[in-house]
Amino acid sequence: MFLKGVLNKILQWPRLLKYRMLSTATISGSKPRINQPVLFNGVGQIFCGNNVSFGVGASPSFFSQYGYLEVRHTSAHITIGDNVAINNNCCFISNGAGITIGDYCCLGVNVTILDSDFHSLDPVARLNKRPGMNKAVIIGANVFIGNNVLILKGATIGDNSVVAAGSVVSKDIPSNVIAAGNPCEIKRELGPMES
Image (cartoon, rainbow, N blue to C red; front, side):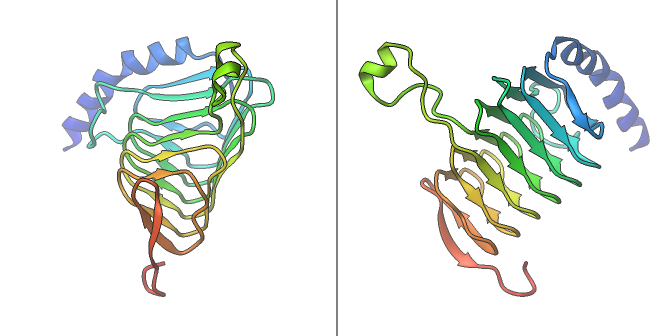
């Protein structure tokens, strides 16, 4: 097991260095633990709390993909709280409204969070290259987000909630519930021993 861990680090080191050199955004706060390459792009602000980790070695896409965080404008920001574990191949893009992830959150493989439509929904405006609507995404504390989840602009997920794998979150999810589906809906409340 120890030898496997050493081998993983040796194989990942050139990839980690490559993506660090390609990154244009700076990270404030604490230095995150980067186990899988992450590309940090843009001119906005990325803040990481204490004990934030990107990537998990014994998980899909560890050697073949990379995480991607982008803050496209000076007003854009991504804030990640303390003790957050983000699995492989994440994609968080802030176009200005902002993305906030609370303390003690766990995010699965291939989680995507977007705070914008990026392109207007109006056909004429889209042809004229007018941007879409931005609205902040807020994820509370101790939220568990499964694999392959897409969280869209304006969504808020309350503390202690669970979002099941493959869900598309386009509206608010309250605290202490299990939610799933496309569109994501509340399936049941969490009991006292579960939350």
